[in-house]
Image 1 (tube, rainbow, N blue to C red):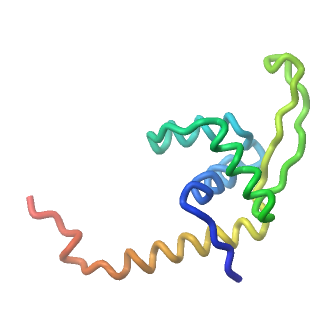
Image 2: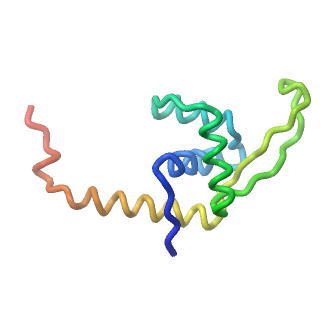
Image 3: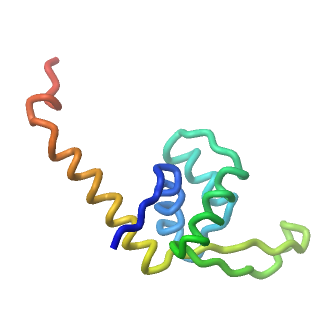
Length: 110
């Protein structure tokens, strides 16, 4: 099956999978910034999460209210089977391109 996702959607989906049942907007935003050194806004992450949900690649549920959030509940995202397929397809596509690079191109000449 073909589940095309953009580069940023792939990154967000990877962190949803990595944070298994603990992923929400702020946690994904912080993880992207920490692990990739990439500055992103909560708005862009939320937009990607909702787009992934529309495509069926993630599902969400409302979590319990927490005291440190002043009673507000957070939306938790989990990857679906279709989302897992999309990540595998994205990984395989990248590996096909990496495999096209001749070994001598990537050798360091220090």
